[in-house]
Length: 107
Image (cartoon, one colour):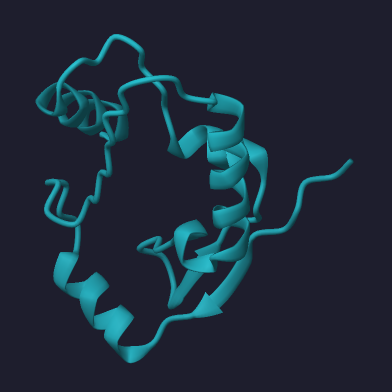
């Protein structure tokens, strides 16, 4: 089976202004990392399936803003994409630990 295409959409005036403002910043000011500490049994397969469904329904989650041209890109929905945006780590035992691992993993 072939790869699904990456869609390109034109930037709005506001999106272009934000990218110009951010420029080449490499700090984490605009990087959003969400981490969750779950205690008790977790059905990882069911969580992955739910995340895959949510990612498939919402283009915003799959959108990237390259600093090239006046477009943003919408990545195709796929299980591979879900695998690239989430991580399960059984060794994390605190919220601070989860934030530290999530930030390192996303960076």
